[in-house]
Amino acid sequence: MNRRMLVNIGLLGLLLVVLLALPYFGVSNFVLGLASTILIAAVLASSVNFLGGDGGMVSLGHGAIAAASAYAVGWASRQGLDSTTQVLLALGVTLVVSFIYGLLSMRTSGIYFLMVTLAVGMLIYGLAFRLSSVTGGENGISGIAAPGDLHEEWIYYYFVLGIFVLTTAALWVVSNSPFGASLRGLRDSESRMRSLGYNVAQYKLGAFMISGTVAGIAGLLAVWHINFVSPSSAGVERSVLLVVMVILGGIGTLLGPLIGASIVVLVENVLSSYVDRWPTALGLIFILVILFARAGVAGSVPKVLAKLRGRGPSAAPPGDRSSSKGAPAPERNHTP
Amino acid sequence: MNTATEMAPASDPQGSGAGAPVLVIDDLGKRYGGVQAVDGISLVLEPGERFGVIGPNGAGKTTLFKMIAGDVPPTAGAVHLFGKDVTTMSTARRARMGVGRTFQISNLFRDMTVFDNVRVAARGGTSKARVFWMPQRAKDDVSERSIEALESVGLADRRNLTVANLSHGEQRQLEIAMALVGEPSILLLDEPAAGLSAVERATLKSLIENLPRTLPILLIEHDMTLALGLTDRVMCMENGRHVVTGTPAEVRDNETVREIYLGRRDKK
Image (cartoon, rainbow over all chains, first blue to last red; front, side, top):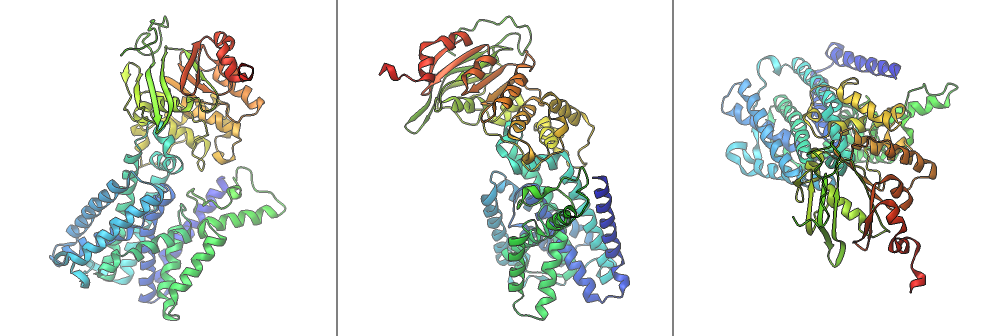
C-alpha cells in the first residue's frame, strides 16, 4: 500500500517534471499551443470526471458552462473592461449558470440527469446564437486578448499548467473529503443516503457548483488562448467530446481526464491533417476502449500490470487490493 | 388522536421524553390502486421496548415499515415519532430525528470501503458531511465512532475491504453498524436475517440481543422463531390487517397465528 503510494507519487512527480520541461525541449509554438489546448481540455474534462466519477452524474452540459464563461470574458473584453473584471465576470456567470443547471438537475439522476444537462446546454447554445447584441450571434466574439505577457505562447503554457495542477489538486482534495465520500454514497445508493438523514438534492447541487466552477475556469483559459468564442463552443458536440475524453481516460481516475484529453485533442488536431476522417478514427478508438478496457486507460493499465505481476513468481504484495474481482465496473477510486 | 392502544406510561426512566411512547402508529393504511396493502394498523412502542411484526409474505409488513421510515406516504392514519406527528415528513428528516434503520435487501455503498460506508453513515447529513476542503481524517471523532460501531458488529478488521467483497452475512452486519453509528433513538430492522444461513442467523441474533436495552427496536421478520426470540411484544399481520398483539408466548400459542404459519387446510 505504502509502496504503491510512493510509486504513484513518483510517477506524478515525473509527469510534472516533463510538463515543466516541455518548453525547454526546443519545441515549436505549435506544439506548445497544442499542449496548452490539451491541458485546458483536461481541466474541463476533469470537471465532468469529478461529477461523473464521484457523483455518478454524467453531464452533457459542461461544454456550455465553459462557453458561458468564455462569452462573459468576450463580452467584458469588447466593453474594454480590464482582465480582473473579465475574470470576476466569468466567475459570476459560471456560478449563476452552474446554479441553474444544479437546480434543474438536482432531483434527477442517471439518464434523466443527462437529459436535463443536455437541455440546458442547448438552451445556452440557442442563447449564444440569438442574443447577438451580447454574443455577436453566429460570428461570435473575436479579438479577445489574454492580459499582460500571457499572449506569449510559452508563458501561457505555464499559466495553464499551473491552473491545471491547482484544479486537479483541488478536485483530488474534494474527492477525498467527507463531502466526496457523501457524493460517492449518493452515487451508490440515494435511498440509503436519505435514510441516513442526507438531503440528497443539496449535495447534488453542491457537487454541480464545484464541478461547474472548474468548467468555468477552463472556459476562461480557452478563450484567452484562442482569443475567440462562437456558438459552436457551446454545442452539444463539445460536451459529448468531454464525456468521450473522460471515458477514454478512465472515469473517476486522477489522470484520466489528462489522458483522454490528450487522445482526443491529438486526434482532432494532428491526425486530422493526415486523414479527413479523423472522427472515424476517434470513434474506433472509443469503441475499442469500451470493448476491451471499460475502465479507460488510467483505470485499465494498473489492472493489467497487477495481472502481469500476479502471474510472476511473487504474489501480489499484501494489502494491495487487487480490484480485478469487480471485473468490468470502472475503477472509481482516485488512483492515478 | 384516537389511539386505539392503551397508553400506559412505561416505568422506564430512560429514553426520550420521560416514558412517553417512542412511536405511535394510529390506524395506518396504505392502498395501492385496488389493493389495500395495509389496513388500519395501530401500535405503540414504549421506550426501551423491542417490538416485532410478523406475518407471511404479502402481509403488509414491509409497507408498514416503509411508512414508519418515511419511504412511502400512508393513504390513511398517522405516524408519531417521539411525540411528534411525522406522517408527512421526509425520510431524511425522520433520520435526523433519530431513526436508524436497516434494509431488507442490503442497501450499501457497494463500490466504497466498509470504513467509508460507516463514516458516511456516522456523519448522517450533518455539517460534517459537507466538509469539502480537506481530506477525510483517519483519526477524527467520526472515524473513531465508526471503528467502534464496526467493532460492535465484528467487522473492524474488514474495514478496508470494498463492500462488494463482503459475504452476505457480513453485509447484514454492516447494515446494522451503519444504523447504529448515528446513535439512533429508535432502530427499525427490516427482515435483518433475510437470506442468511443458520450460522449467520445465530451470529446476527446474538448481535441484536446484545444491543443496549435502552434502544427501542421495531423488528419486521418473516421468520417467527427469530422474531419471537428477540422481542418483548409481537404483532402478527395478515393481508394488511392486524391479527393479534401480545407477548411472544401469547402469539406463539395463538390459534390464528398457528393457522397462518402452518396452514389451515384441515379447516376448509
